Image 1 (cartoon, rainbow, N blue to C red):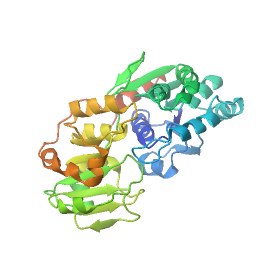
Image 2 (image 1 turned 180 degrees about the vertical axis):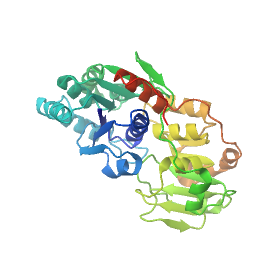
Image 3 (image 1 turned 90 degrees about the vertical axis):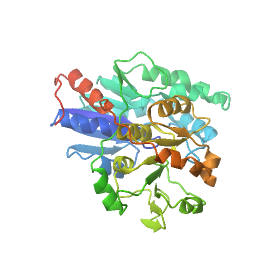
Image 4 (image 1 turned 45 degrees about the horizontal axis):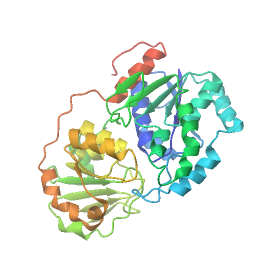
Length: 366
């Protein structure tokens, strides 16, 4: 059995969600093989997708939104990239369709690459769209700021509607007709909380705060406000070129050796850019989340509502984050106990759905 995953390279959230589904599929269908088709860096899958039978195939599958920083989008730059990507050329679609046939794919899993869906249709291979938003919906939110997005919305909507199966994952931004609405999808932690803390050299009774920008390298300036809050240890991926302690700050490189779901699970509070994969991992770990909104990104409103409802979440403004004023609310967040989550991980729901559609039946993962 061969599944080809065609993944958007917008941040790491779509890759994280896909990895979670593929990991669960591997537990349900032990002889399943995977092709990962994307321009997300190969090291991400080497670190995350711990299965033997997969191939990484670098290919530009999507544009998404060009980012100038974790919080600022480059709308003119996005439009220029879309102009070179849409409408899909026959050459590009045919190349991917032939690749899917050559690789003997039985199913194409798309998160949220419209090109993968169009190529699967041409190759006569069933496709599954997995999303909590689609790009036509995101671009609609930018029309007042950048009217040229209108040129692409219908093309994208038509492409997404070509999918044979449609799965939406909570928190959903806009509910549409779908075959399944799953619980949040996250990768599972690998290490118990105390083992990861031992590896980080953080004691079990020290409050640990994870500051994350969802895979976008970050420069925190100044760091001194965090150092003054010495009641907690702050773990900050992407803030240094090497593993580095600065008093109560543990700075990690962008590509580090610790598995992100383990970092989330070992934390007492997560702080960072509002993004799907961090929400899903914090949700299933029961960790409070202090989120920084992206004010022009249309996904912000439904995601923020979910965080505040389900994760004891608190909003902090970007300026307050940069200048350390958010530390005023940190003691309240640290006082919140971890929440016990009883719901099934959406990755299992999706894997079971796909297994059923492939005619493999449904079994519980081992």
